[in-house]
Amino acid sequence: MNPESEVEVLLIEDNPADVELTLRALKKRNLANKVHVVSDGAQALEFLFQEPGQGRNRPSPKVVFLDLKLPKVDGHEVLKRMKSDPRTRTIPVVILTSSKEESDILQTYSNGANSYVVKPLDFEKFVEAVSQLGLYWVLLNEAPR
Image (cartoon, rainbow, N blue to C red):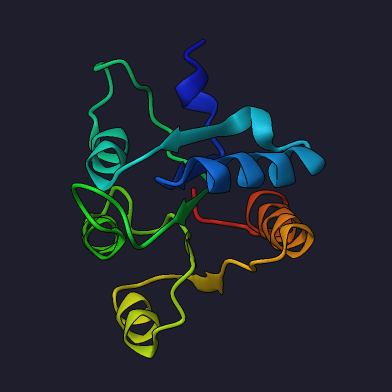
């Protein structure tokens, strides 16, 4: 079976340290083995919109953790594309970013984000926040099928 067909979390993050912390936090909840990581917006769009038979089977991830400041295609554009396409519109998107800018918060919610979380600077708080996000969005949230 193709491991990408079992993806529960799509992590779109360009900072290797934040990727490592996020994976560590998800591992705490036994979710890290079903995470697919991409490091820029172009890779994210390719992963999300690749047609079945091109090395990827549907289903889509249960949740997307999306950073806003990404190379190639920024997080705002990835979010806009996801929420405007019927194939990805219902996938919950959690913005996980260092930006506290009111304009970023307003823009992401107006583009359909399901949640906006500012990355805590403290290591333990970061791990706990991501752990709780994973628990809620992957295990507790009921999404349409």
